[in-house]
Image (cartoon, rainbow, N blue to C red; front, side):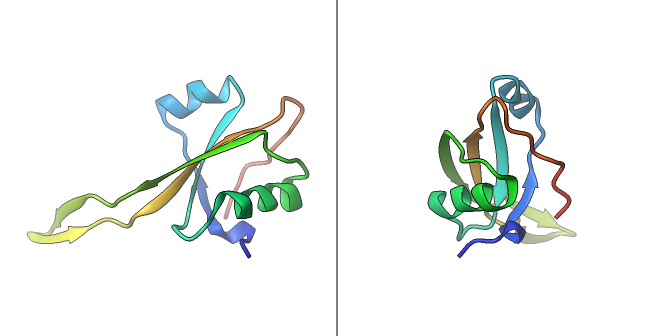
Length: 93
């Protein structure tokens, strides 16, 4: 069962800000969350059901950290279409 703590953050990039004008929010979560679990989180904590949810898994980049090879964390990204009357308070998780 997913919980509100599985949502890591809302992504605010140039692309995601332009998508918010059409009612699509970009949410970064842990890799184990599914679409149905995220839909249940929105229903329980924010009081509305998303109209549509698309997901993608983003693998961590391989980078050098102080001369040693390392990898950033992988995560899952969800594109959530919210109803027009829905209000989401800022997520400070």
